[in-house]
Amino acid sequence: MTSTESATFESLLGQLTPIKGLPNNLERRLLQRARVISIGKRQRLSSHTEHNWMLYLLEGSLKVANASGAETINVPSSRSLRPIFSGQSLSEVAVTQSESRILKIDRQFYELLLREQDDAGIEIHDVQVTADEGALFQAMYQAYIQESLQLPTMPEVALSIRKAMDDPGISAEHIGRLVQLDPVIAGGIIQAANSPLYRGNKNIGGIRDAIVRIGLQATRDLAISLAIKNIFHSRNALVKKRMHCLWDRSVHISALSYVIARHEGHLNAEQAMLAGLMHQIGVLPLLTYIASEGIEFTTEDELERVLDKLHSLVGVLVVTQWGLDSHCGMIIEESRNWMRDPSPQADIADTVLMAQLIYGSDPALPTPDSVPAWKKLNLGELDDNLQPQAIVEAEAEIQAIKQLLGAYS
Image (cartoon, rainbow, N blue to C red; front, side):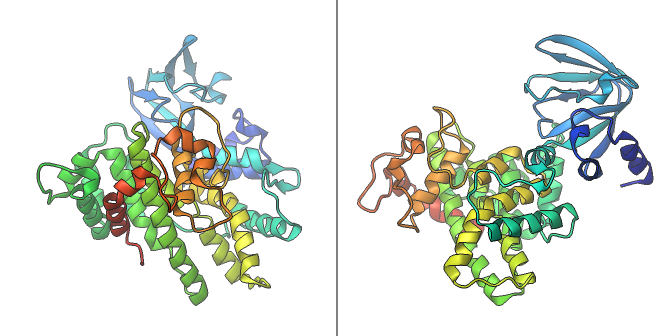
């Protein structure tokens, strides 16, 4: 952050609606994570491509069109202190009337702070925890706010690709140059393009052709998925062993989520793959924090209960830190809500829930056909091993994904 941006952010404290409703220290934290971009005259902004951000006009003039009509925003004005887009529709557009500077604030991080902050600190909603479990999460959250909590870092190439995809005009060539910075990710994308996941008429040997076959959005999700394995490590031998087991389970859930989404048809299979891989990402910082603080548990079952209850809360901190789409945070939060039924149509969260039940490592879990997601996903009849017909028929794809992501076993 430059000194000019720092001064600008400081001057905005208590000025912008709705973030001025946060406590001052959290508002400052939110602004410190913001971005400022400069754009020329007659440039178009879309609420669809910018839905992860709250945009404010810092300098210049622009015209916004929405369902209610059109309005012009100038600086300075009271209107410039409110977001350019309402956040209620993905069809709003804005066109700059002059050279302008735009402030971009992470919407998901703001919503996290808004939802979980009260006078005493963060609240834990919808999770039944003991006093000790609540105290553990409170301590971790305070460390997060103070930037001292050790969270897994998104690998550099995956981060570069995610940021580049914010540009609606990005090309396959540009993404290809970024992907080639990491031979493992580049090789994985070419391998995926030639696998049963993306059947083509000819074998592909170059990264650009692989990206064209897969698609830009799918390449982004796949690159992040390929990079995530690098964060499942620890110097602590016991934690490392636990992380390896978690990775193998996550890869299997990821593969199942992919084939379920692809079978459903209207769902994004690559998003489902990434969501399945990340649904327990909160376990990593939990294990790291417990080991670093020397926290001991009487039995392994006690540790597992803590991980099971708290991983979703901590996982939201990870996806917020990474700047991933808000659906990732929602899926992590809903990852054990077996009876969720928000709409008649299946969503990505349903695929991850169903994948866990099909994986079936815990006999205490519901059977796949006993939850609302089952009726929405049309996976066929269950066999004697409680495996749906669609999953049995997709075994080749499941194995291809496990090989692609590099399961340990």
